Length: 174
Image (cartoon, rainbow, N blue to C red):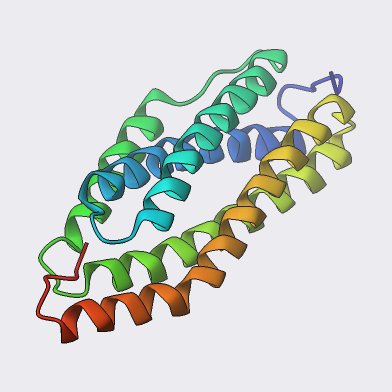
């Protein structure tokens, strides 16, 4: 524990960041689940998104454990709002003929948002002396970096597959 000092603005910023990231992970889970439901022609992406759901669920548990050590809990309102946001974000691309491409771009950006958030949380944990939380946060950061690298590596193959399916007259969007 970092010797929480209630009312200390640095600790409060850290705790808010933890709650915010918890809500972001809840959104990520829903976003990935909705996309997995629709992926038909992109088995590599589907499998990796399914794996990332499991990783994100573990990240949620890590964040909850950190919050609990600090005598805090996730924000139900934020988590609910972000879950709804994840569902809406996934639904926005459904009518697009190039749904897979739009989702790939959005997922790449989302992963980099999470990479930045975990990098910041690690810096905050170190700043407040919460050494016990650094390793779990680094594990989550490593998972997000791996997912971001996967999406980057799959952007060209996904685009090429989309184009080939489109040329062949197959609905290639998902």
